[in-house]
Length: 139
Image 1: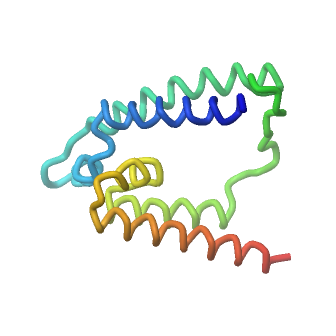
Image 2: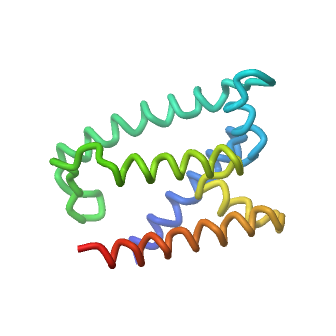
């Protein structure tokens, strides 16, 4: 039960952060990527703030060795940059740039009942399922 409450609280804080920063608006994201038009640097400041908070949180969590709820902290030692990581990052970036959505804001925007948002989420879920099927196929 405590895990569900913690997940709900984290999601609520994340969603409120998206709303307050305006990052739920796909036009804001696309304007950030439009260097030769109406460039909007605000996403860089939101990302910078998020990275600063995350760096501190990850350093603290790494020293603890386990989460506040008692789960072991995952380690990524030995997992460097590889073709799978670069391919996934490129696909994510292209989808993000074309649609203006990444998974969190897309899920938040489902409440708008906008058909494009629903189409994006369906395509995102299909991509996730395809990736899992592909991953199971690989040795």
